[in-house]
Image (cartoon, rainbow, N blue to C red; front, side, top):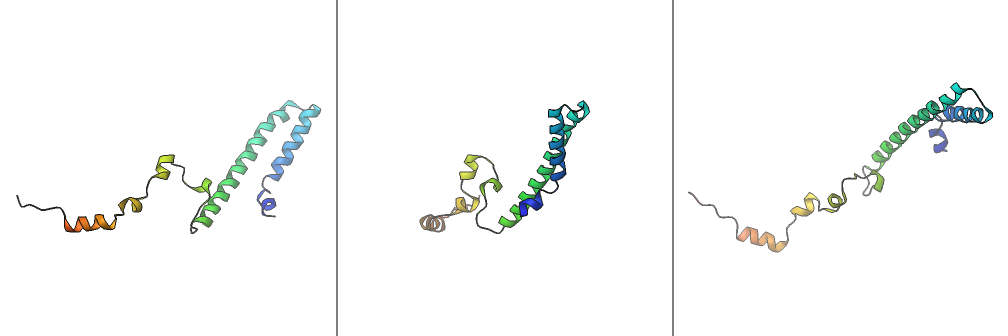
Amino acid sequence: SSGINAEWPLRPGKTELSNLQVQKVTGGATNKLSKIKDVRKSIARCRTVLRANQRENLRKFYKTKKYMPLDLRPKKTRAIRRALTANESSLRTLRQRKVDTHFSQRVYAV
């Protein structure tokens, strides 16, 4: 039922469009035919706003979740998406940590 409620702003535009298309087939006035484009564009505008609101709500919903749908994740590039995160790249093995502590960078007084 949520889909029906979400589409109510589109209903008047859709009915008007279908009426105009019927008039076109039956041989309506030319000014009516030119109005078809405007009605289609207004429907598209309405749909764009609905979609943006829907995506915004989905982003809020998935903000706290572990995983997010692929289409809501940042696109970036394939290489960037597969690259190590800042945390992963900063991790050191136990052996490397030992080497770093026992053979630290020497400081010379010049």
